[in-house]
Length: 109
Image 1 (cartoon, rainbow, N blue to C red):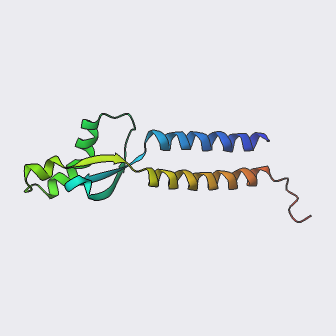
Image 2: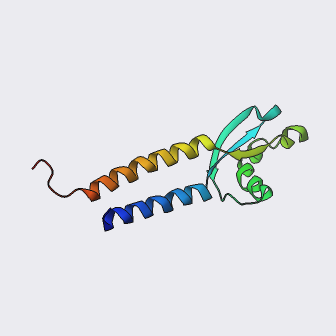
Image 3: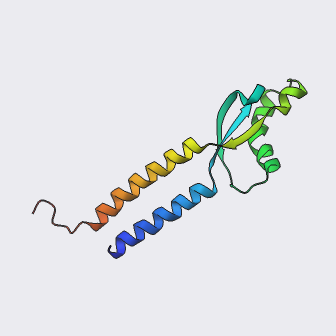
């Protein structure tokens, strides 16, 4: 592993860590969380109350006339599928960059 490859690997690991610290979230509502919608990325260790205020405010404004029971059925959860896709795409990019900077300049010779 040369110096440039080491830089690519460190940058990829840092990007993966940031993606893990600020993962994508899903907003759920309805009976038993039956309706799900992708939401924004937010800090992993945020309190549930602050996340609900941040993620649910736009939805609450749209459905202000709903009953208290419906409003109580809102929830948030991590979107593991989107996070896995983000990490997979990052891994492919880092792998390609690692190969690119590791080539010896003698392509086809």
